[in-house]
Image 1 (cartoon, helix red, strand yellow):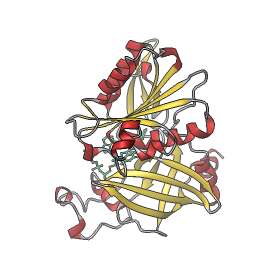
Image 2 (spheres, protein in one colour):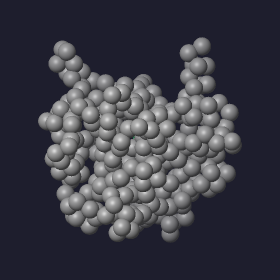
Image 3 (spheres, rainbow, N blue to C red):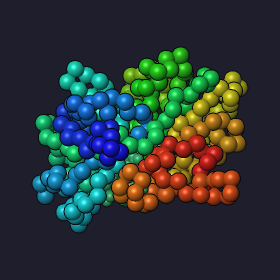
Image 4 (cartoon, rainbow, N blue to C red):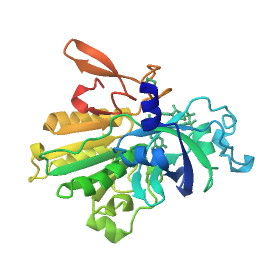
Length: 312
Ligand SMILES: Cc1cc2nc3c(=O)[nH]c(=O)nc-3n(C[C@H](O)[C@H](O)[C@H](O)COP(=O)(O)OP(=O)(O)OC[C@H]3O[C@@H](n4cnc5c(N)ncnc54)[C@H](O)[C@@H]3O)c2cc1C
Ligand code: FES
């Protein structure tokens, strides 16, 4: 009975590729169309949740399209499913469209680039808990580091429909301008107005960019950019909620900023995952407990955690 319920709510489902376009550098945006039970399941997706893709039968690109640095690993078999979060989810006549932004880093993400419109992808999900919408807050602060922006883009979409009165602002950081996983940085006027990133501007959310080398926006870590912004006189910590997603070191810095300023903060952790459904214990996250420390599972108890609960 439990297994039948799992199959109905989490799949596996066959999704059809509706588009798969390069954004720039290693970044791509993939659109997946779910119909039937899959459409129902994915229509209820919360931002921050993820899905496990079966990439084992997806073809490799032609040898000349394989980047030099991936030539040695490209032909590795993809035995384990790979986790991806969502950048946008939309209910349409033809089903539920789920958009994923991915960066080509290894053999599985390399194969994803060959998926063409109409091809199928086997997907288990949506999995994990996702971000919840705050009660009694006036400002949502979305902080992305590197590839952490897709679930925050989805959160921005969700806030416009579920919390239209809530003000929001986004921060995105990366090593250099080229490492920001967005389609394009907007023009000078947009930047002066605070709308650097089209992905957030489309939800009327202004954004700050931080790069380690200063090639765009604030020169330095995104946590320092946030700290600068928090120095404004009119900031009331109790009115704010921070949502962050990115590398662990960046999440640790954001958690510290939040703790020092007494701001509520939720972080989406990215641990390496094998099963994605709480069976293999490969995604343990060290957390605080009344008895000292304990381990929780990123795939099942997370990936979103209250930053105060994590032992960074
Ligand atoms: C909950 C969750 C959501 C994710 N969402 C996205 C997303 O929206 N877009 C996206 O591009 N990627 C996302 N990822 C990461 C994605 O799963 C990996 O990039 C992918 O599995 C890499 O597979 P690969 O075979 O191409 O590369 P691999 O050879 O498996 O890995 C390439 C490099 O990336 C590192 N890496 C792989 N997986 C992770 C991970 N989970 N955390 C940290 N480092 C990792 C490896 O250490 C290695 O250095 C997410 C991961 C998790 C856990
Ligand atoms: S990935 Fe297997 S328990 Fe979390």
